[in-house]
Image (cartoon, rainbow, N blue to C red; front, side):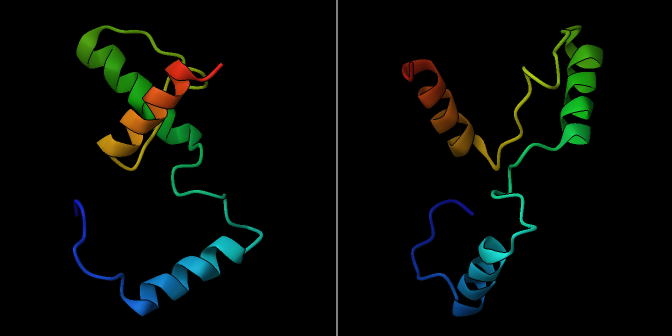
Length: 78
């Protein structure tokens, strides 16, 4: 959690390499998940009375740092 101050254990690195090399891998852990995006849009509709299109207006991220980095990239990239 947060910013680790020690090296990643070898078995984790090996599993990451194995997963990335698997052609069935979606590419990233935050690859689009339609069911999750629909559930998030539904939550926002119920909780905040906000209509969101889950296909174009909802992004699932691994955390706030990834979300903010993606946001910065989205608004500064042509």
